[in-house]
Each structure stands twice: as C-alpha cells, then as structure tokens.
View (cartoon, rainbow, N blue to C red):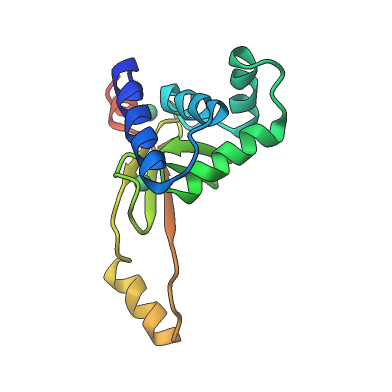
Length: 148
Ligand SMILES: [Zn+2]
Ligand SMILES: [Zn+2]
C-alpha cells in the first residue's frame, strides 16, 4: 500500500472507531500503518520490531492487542500458513477470506467470496454442519513472478 492509501485507511479506521465509541490509540495507529505499509504479509515479531522504531520500548502485548483488535473488526486478516497479517482489501465487513499467496515474492492477494463454493456448501449441509466462518489459502505463483 502506498503512503497515500495508508493515510486513507488510517482515516477510515479512525472514523470507524469514533463512530463505534472505541479508542484509536497511538499503538493501534502505528500497528495499522506498519501492516498497511508492508508489501507482503508481516508476522507479529516483525510488527513489534517496527513498532520499536516508532515507540519507546513497546511491550509485546501492546502489539498483540492491537493486532487482535484489527482482526476482530475485520481490518486485518491472519494468514495461517504464513503466521502473518495483512490488511483487508475487501472492506472490512465480509464473511470468509481467501488468499492467493505467491510462493516466490510472498505477496498475498485477497479474494472475497462471501459464500462457500457450492460443492463445499453441499458437503456441510449433508453433514448437518453450521458454518460460522471459513478461509482458504491457495499457494502458487503470481502473475508478476511468472512474467518477470
Ligand atoms: Zn478482507
Ligand atoms: Zn509473486
């Protein structure tokens, strides 16, 4: 995300927090900016390291709580297979998150199918299973890495 987009995102999130009566604290702002500025998914340890360049000796829970906050409100997604976080690119209110993850450059491209594909939906129904959330992580190579 370029600087301009990071700025816009910060404004959107700040407005959201104000509207919902939640605090947009300094650590939250910094963590949001750090993840947004990263061109690929970024792990909690790296987030903390970068937070240390901005704040005086931040404690790990400060970073983790901020990450958790953004995850809960849909502004960030955790990519399990990378143990890393990305900004939501599909507005922050959607069910299901799916990523195409490039194994060469490491970027994660979000898709946002809100509903399970029909085949999977049919399987869950057959099982009598109620879906509360789902995600998919598809590994491969992105267009840029295939055509350098
Ligand atoms: Zn999303
Ligand atoms: Zn790539």
